[in-house]
Amino acid sequence: MKTIQLLKTASGIACVAFALHVNAQTNSAAPSSASETLGQHVDDGTITTKVKADLLAAKDVKSTHIHVKTRKGVVWLTGTVPSSDDKAAAEKVVLNVSGVDSVKNRLKIQADE
Figure 1 (cartoon, rainbow, N blue to C red):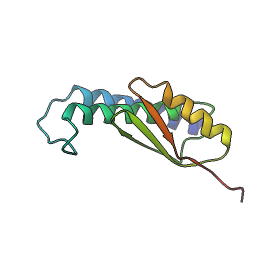
Figure 2: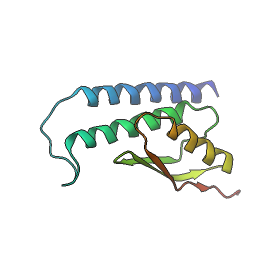
Figure 3: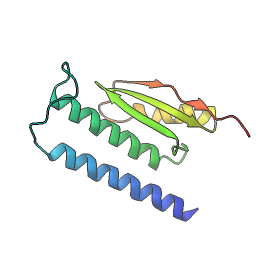
Figure 4: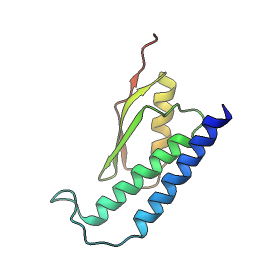
């Protein structure tokens, strides 16, 4: 159990470090779509990284099967969680991340096997 928490913590730190590195870089890469500027693309990537790190660090969310995508400040959550409490807690965590305008929570409750 301590190993899992250690791995979650290490992953969170790595995600935050990556986000800071991406945010600090300046390059002339083309944005991913015609209507999106490079600044928006970097901001969305940073938000996604922060969301993933916060979900990993949250004690009340089992986040190993949650996928995160961000587009213009809107965060999309997909994947599976064990309970409706995890689904609600995940959304709450995401809404507390700076830069998130809204959440499209498409998480599915995992069926008991």
